[in-house]
Image 1 (spheres, rainbow over the protein chains, first blue to last red):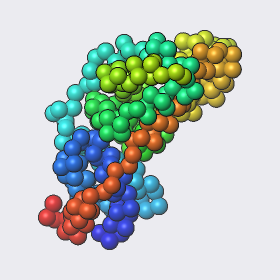
Image 2 (spheres, each protein chain N blue to C red):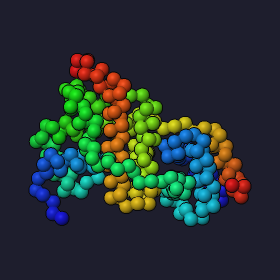
Image 3 (cartoon, each protein chain N blue to C red):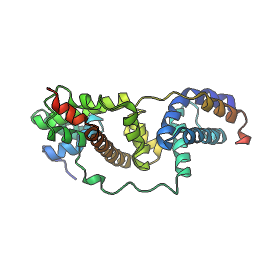
Length: 189
Length: 83
């Protein structure tokens, strides 16, 4: 049994670790989380139906392990996200006169380093981060995320909507604080 | 709940990311699309969001798997009773 599980698990381990790192926020905890999920997968492998989506099955275990570890710390997302503008980056770019550029979104985000974007994703509250990481990094549909996280599609939609808004809000603040917005304003479009 | 015959800017901005993700009903997709062809501001917001999404997805890179994780997982699978 273990050989068969290994053959399925090893090819998706890199992506599972990447997801675990976004959930756990640091390499040590991400490593522990993946190992814990691997152990749970081993113990529950009899419930996996051959020929179905193994990665989805394993990611569900990973999410469950994350929730079990963080149950005490798992808090509802901060109040106030709904008060933000719907499209914080677009609205900010519009207010600051950046929309006459050929691709303002790309020009803005290209000036933010990858680690800062990743850190902004990792800074989202748990319930948003769990779905946002699957959406942005794994490129999954709402239905696929719904299966992995075991919540209705409408809940995925709502959490993703709010998570995306919060992520954009934080990226916009970062772009302002680092002078990226002012720099773009100073350049000719 | 009935679907209106046309969406205004507020309807469209609320749904723009779901439209981008092709996660609206066929009727809603049509209504948003129809609005985008006539409203420059919402079309601009849509293009901005599409480019933002492309940029974020491409920048949120996959992370290399440390050898230590692979080794530990293999050890766990080989001897799960030690876990």
